[in-house]
Image 1 (cartoon, rainbow, N blue to C red):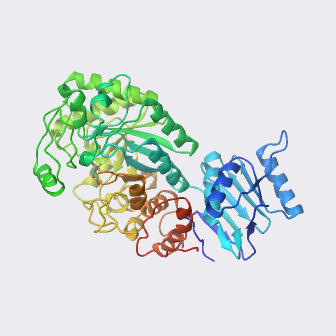
Image 2: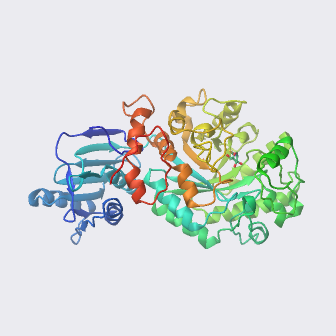
Image 3: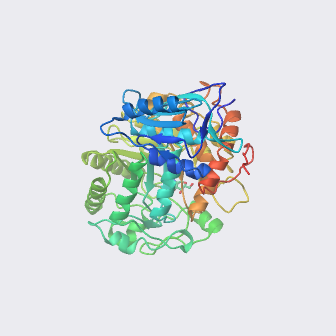
Length: 524
Ligand code: TNX
């Protein structure tokens, strides 16, 4: 038997030629995350597992061994969950036989991932359900495994963000990068600068409604993410992508720089020309810039970044830096040096898009996010290497592979095509993070992130349609052993494994797109 519906592929799977564990209402579950597992099993199968409670004073490994013994001696199928410290961070082990399943995580995140793997293993057996007999040992390749959601081009309410956290965390992704500001809107309420959301949050692309997160909303997202072992990485995109700031603070903004690209975008996608002080609802990029030589800009950023650092418990603050086409190159360098230093002084690690890698004076240790192609063009690889030279590492987000906002089908109204046209599931899969930039190996790579820009994306259904199944390829690039190191780490295997997740996704209300090339499983 193959490794069934496992995505991302675990480091080691040994399938036994033996009966699996029957899943019935009599099957018991104990230990931390028992309620999570019960909820997921109910979604997948409709079965309400029986919770066997801990005895007074028992620790988790005592519960595990007692339940194992009880499970064997009574032949009552038993699932035990436990945290047993000692292994690699986020690692877990699953051992399933005909009477018991034990999931042990090296830490709470590892246990959480083990539970999700166990749920992926569930399959129909006769009239019921079972978990096949298997031993899995698993640990991540990269520490940073992310998704990005652009809440600026279209605002997405808290409920959409938490639903995306559910989805991403179930695939072992552990960072949620929120692109909180752009030309079209400022989406985070700040006490120090209330004018931002008062004047610059009302609309989205295409004249659609806008919105913003109150501080409580933002804290709710951070807390929900943490409960799913995800860290929020907030981004304030600077010094370009800042037209919205001109609605609240016109004195901080340069006049828009109108290039041929802007004229072409208006011709192809509609929308008006950007005009300072007026909400921008088009899709052009690269026309706006903050004033680089005005101290008021840095007073503004001290407030914004300072408050964001307070609100955000995670180690990273993303300062954007992409497509600052309206900012002179020398000014851009000055700005990047100054703002990455501000972030470092706040005790956070700055993250920036790869353009910033060329800036002399980049704060040491700044993380770069590469968004060029799998085969780099236009010196984007050299820009990315600048971060490594400055003592930082890279987050790999190759646009022609894992930009989830690229079209999956030329005829769908969803998505864009600038990154080498339609991105098939196979193209999303067939790349390796350490084979993109010459000289950049696993040690230089912090991880992998799949961005979702939302120019064309209005709803959770739109997000699902674009993200699924290609997000599975991104998760595998981030978590699984490198391509070539495992016989199942191939497109041929992935297309079967990811297709086998269709029933789980359907029952979880994930509106995935049944892309061609994948063996979609049916369960009637
Ligand atoms: C490029 S990738 C952008 C975004 C757009 C995106 C659309 C990057 C750092 N910037 O401003 O939304 O393309 O795919």
